[in-house]
Image (cartoon, rainbow, N blue to C red; front, side, top):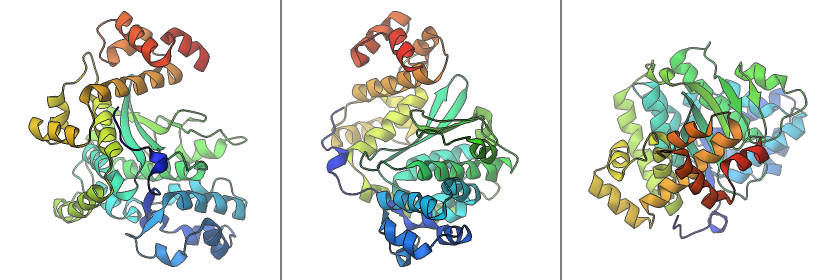
Length: 344
């Protein structure tokens, strides 16, 4: 993919201060020294009062890591996410709950997530009849991110519960970081099996869940929020951001054949001409994005599922296993069979 800048040379990643709503109260409830926690994280607590203030994402992640240490509660991020309601997320949360269906809510969150937090992947991945909502910070400078991952998946699950009811639970939850001793608190919090040391942070759910109506659907409210989110997306946009959006749409549309540009343009609400102009403006090539999407999904399928190789090939849009095997050798320098043996 022809991307002109490395993430590591760009400005610091940002997140809106609304993501800290209720954090000080939680830290205090668990016996934490709030001023010390915010101070060690490098965040002025007064800056969190305005939900649209931008915070440094690395400092935000450090805030919860520091809180875990200060309160001697290694699951404080998990606790924060469990009780964090969509409206507390600010504009992005209101965009979700004002959508007509859960499907529209997730699509709007995917489209506007860069407005809330940039240099982050928020996307859906198809896998053997279920869908995974995946969340992954792309900025390699942010190394300590366990608490953020746990609180974020908790937040996202609550958006699903707002449509499907409090009894809803994901099919499975996965985290990038290694599991703590025991790990029972995580399974209890999500009411689902939880696995650690995976390639991304994600939870699985049934496709039919997306058909649920959002109980607080409000097209007028959404029409007010949308310009703010669009403006922020434009402000924060970078070549990687558009490429990520397109690649994620390609992943959602891979089946027995690779999608064509017109299909992805339609999914993004663009004309074919508009889509091609955007690709050119961002110096990315559609075929490169198809290749990147296939490679990412291939690694996911091979390391995290027991899906037969022939089925993986078909899910990636290859007509036969041999074509997939040749492509995979070009990506990874080894056969898919050997890769699976080494990574499972």
